[in-house]
Image (cartoon, rainbow, N blue to C red; front, side, top):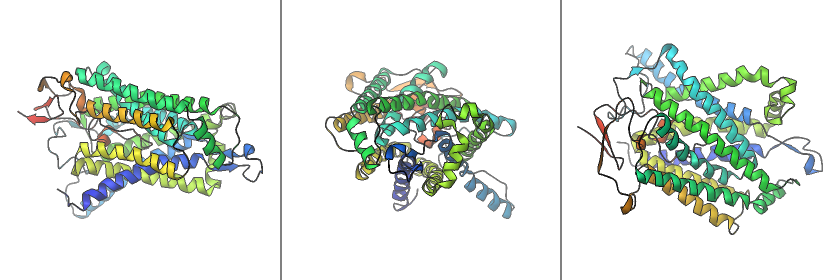
Length: 432
């Protein structure tokens, strides 16, 4: 058990790095990259390159290979057998050691979830261009709704009544946050005024379009989680290695698509996919370049801190810490003047966010369901290659820019329970 001084450092590191991902990405979107000397702010061109932002995210995930390589080199120097670091090794009940190791060509199985990660993250980066960062972060809480639904359809899970009620609660929370976005015109106008921009396009329409992109992205992220759950039910792999592989496959996919996206007919259709122009803007604008480096580093550190919190504290602590991360993003954006406290917008945001948090916590058994929704004490379905109960899949995670793997949530994808473990209705597991 880590010292009492070490645990707060891990929790604080997770909050700081997780918050900085979204905040720095939003700040990057606000940077002027062309016509900056024009006295008319309407002619300024801001950095709007979601594909390049997705690539920097994948590069950050690839940095997770560094501690793996370091451990491998140290093991070679000691002439001892090489074991890749597993962040779950101190929790013997969480990984089925009888699973076949993921190696060789089978590593390519991670390419499909990486493709889902790429699509979902790019769509979320587009949505971030049009929405305040707090609404963007809260809207991502809809992930639990999509993962829960897809787990029933494709993983054949059976959810209790209180879990369906929790999903409806999450839906209500997302609706409230989205409705507050439709009222955000004054707040967004204030932000644009601070940036010296004078745009005539209705801001309500832009914010709602941004919310739609973020919600649509959750379908791909949920698919990513479900596919990872399927893969990890059969194969075992160290979490940091899996994160690094997905970063590698995602970055490789973008690089392979660059010649196609660089074609004039495609590049001219939308500034979002004009990669040559985006590269020029990236390397010739110091604020964009350095913020991209900061985002990549913070993503890798967020994965490390998140896995460490799950390993040394608990998945519950990670869920609660992630909630604090969303709140910190909102508070920082208010402090920076990017958003304003306006009635009833702010009240609806708080109410919707409260619904999101309560629904997610209820789904995962972190809070007791109402008495009229109580279920039998134990669900007598054995968890083997496929679990029969949905609590092991999800945790309170708004999947920020890290597009984190299910293990990073504390529960899910890379957490495959041993065959002699039974899952109980309240999220408590025990061995026979």
